Image (cartoon, rainbow, N blue to C red; front, side, top):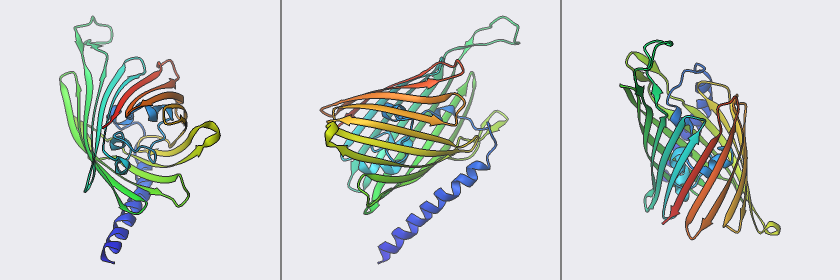
Amino acid sequence: MFMERKFNAALWGMLGALAVLPAVALAGESGTAGFLSLRLGAGARSAGMGDAQVSLAQDATATYWNPPGLAAVKSTNFTLMHNEWLSTVRMETASLAHATSFGNIGLHFSGMYLDEIERRETASSESTGHFNVFEYTFAGAYGRTVHRDVDLGVALKGLYSKLDDVSASGWAMDFGARYRTRIAGLTFAGAAQNLGPKVKFIADEFVLPAVARLGADYQRDVPALRGRMVGAFDFIIPTDGDAHQHAGLEYVYREMASLRLGYKANYDSQGLTFGVGIKKSGYHFDYAFADVGNDLGDGHKFAFSIDL
């Protein structure tokens, strides 16, 4: 009885915090958040499905998307991703999840870097050299099943950014919950991401891109197609802009090959996505393409995963 009350208090506290976060997010100032790398995702399956992942991620990438998803990992999962984003941005990520008897743990690293930029004293002067811009994120997460169909999780991140010879560092936290409904295949989830203090470059401060994610996914075997269909939807409320909607579909053929389609709504430049995946003997290869407008170039993600 005591454990039941303790669980209920923890669950309602988590859900209450997730309900309040959208109001906090809407109170943010548009265009003021930094740390672009915190927005670019992890894994290529997610990208092919329009990044609709808050309830769906159940592998090492859940450390990024929503840490309670780590509870679904049965042994060890390791994922590497390379991201070619727009025309000048590159990003590498490595994610690890490991199951233990006291809950599952996750580790995540991301490194984002830009092509070298010319240094000029004024807009019309000759170049005096080049400089680099990069960001690093290190995260540790924990997720576990706490009561029948409920998973909870939390993540802590260390952040570091460098622009030429100026650097900044900070920290942030994520937390979330997943609920597997009594309807077979239907899951709801919510996450609060990038909650932390402002980060300072010399004298200038900026807020982190805190965001509320609420979503659901539905999975169903389709014998006529010799596979499984997956649909997912996320509602995104950022601190520094309008709300967005992410939707994705996936067809999985005999747990061997996957086709994916997604769409991101209410963005100026982002929209349609698609992807493919191949799985064999615990090895996964995934590719995703994102259509980006306004002459910014397209996005390509490549990911390789191993189930150990």
